Length: 160
Length: 281
Image 1 (cartoon, rainbow over the protein chains, first blue to last red):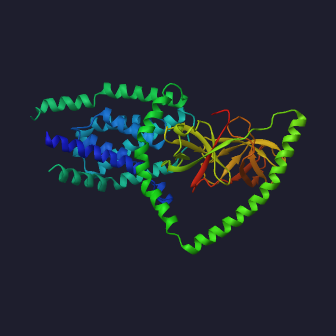
Image 2 (cartoon, rainbow over the protein chains, first blue to last red):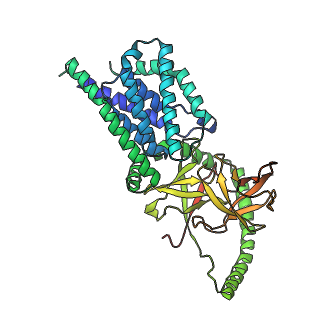
């Protein structure tokens, strides 16, 4: 039980940290290159540590992000729920892949997220193509090995 | 007691079941639609944003604190210099206001002669900026005055130089402001020199607005001043918006492409005021 509580605490503090990283004010130069931290964290946990996370909790974290960023309520929530579900479904294959294949899977998932966002923007009448979103997806995929190893290290040291 | 492996798998399957995904997708679509239409669930959003206001405040605290610190630790010489220039400005403005009193009374007399209604005074509420939207293409800010301080949705927001935007959402202790440079924003303007009315839309660039609804034979040139026209009823009449920086006449196009630089400092704003319509209170 103790282990479970710690795990729960770890997962939620990581999700909160990524929400904070998404909304904290940064200088203009870095502003454009803000990585999709919450999506990355959710994908990681949906593949590698599914014990205390589910679609509903992921959805709520997305809703918090929507409210904090002033976006359409439910947009990020929907995207995160879909990404989390897909990551969970392919978790057995992804876990045994070598790193470069995991990176490809992350690229596909993050691109799908951007695509859903584009659809939602298109339906709500203000679709514009922001090249930086896609550049950030590329950067996120490149830094994914470091991100994943770092999170794994933190997880193992925290849950010892 | 540790769970049996099969029980664990069952729980994962339940947590990530397709049914839950479908339910969540449907709820999200309903939420998005309602939020977009701004009808039934807008109250829910107000309370949710109000409950996250402290978190937002805390997240932006370091940034605001550093800015305040910068002001406090700026040099004495600089402060004295600033004080001096402010005094000069104040003196100039006071002397200008003396003429305004005369103009105002004259204006009122003329309106009385015409028998029509003059535009009424607006009341101002001073506010500070708490947060800026982290999404680059969304030009939104959050200010520290909300419906608790009688701010109403739709009021215009300005700084000492010109119009900045208007209030789109209430957060009880704060409110969200859409800036005039946002791509979804359009402001009815009037060209002071010719009294021509038009609409300036945001470009997603903090120091540029664009007018692209004026035909090529329009009398407009670089340096023309734009003020709010008061049409549409959202923005009060006569507040400065910006100045024309470029008039581009593309051959073959039937409309001019006019670039406008806003007067208000949309990027680094400190104190702002909310212009409350008298009827709105």
